[in-house]
Image (cartoon, rainbow, N blue to C red):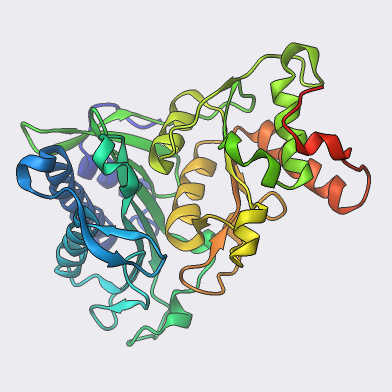
Length: 353
């Protein structure tokens, strides 16, 4: 059990005492740099229009998304502060088409979404930064793209920082997931949410219902079961939430459980996209945090953390959260793929009958 009130570094030092092979000095120094980066980004986000950081810079990133000023600034903060540690051999970033080489022979590769949810900036919605920490393969001096393509189970740790009413850094070094709140007066992150636990059962679900007619039949059947409530096969009522901010959705599930999904749909397939979110710097780091809190993450057909990445910007469908809900979601996909049931045509329309 993590001890509430510890600073981030104090917590990591305690972890090091019992797990020195997993929580090294280098990993602690890296998390310290990540915390500094998050504090700087938090300040920029909080200042908003006062600091002149809102609005677009023009053009699109590799994802085909409009680039915001805060995207560029956050990306640079991460590269500068983590790069100066000399601990990062390469960065995989949402904002860069190719890996960015840093210090040759350094122990870590960082996959990062410097500012997740940037479309929410101008409406003052929660946004965040996501970090995945991977080992540099032994004996590798100059990191190439192939060296970065490691499955999520290879992560040494991960974290995300949510910039909301409070700035909270959620961290895992593969011994539970824990939340640290930034004290703006001292500049320290203090452990305020020790040992997140996602209950196996859920009462809330989150999905973009406007895509109902584009989903695969097992997704529609799963959501229909939830909408039928007490009268349906699940025998209980559910509430629906949809924040449209990945960091905020995951944080809500960590705090009060639930299930969140962004499945593949016909619109994505027409763009030759297998999913909406990116495997290396969104699904994998968040998946590690969720599973370390007792939850589960899947594509609906495969365990996400076991996937071998094919490219640094690979996209995947995601379902994550309370274990029983994710398992039911996966079960329906398996049954559908095996031809064990068929969907009636009228159920493509939104119906709970």
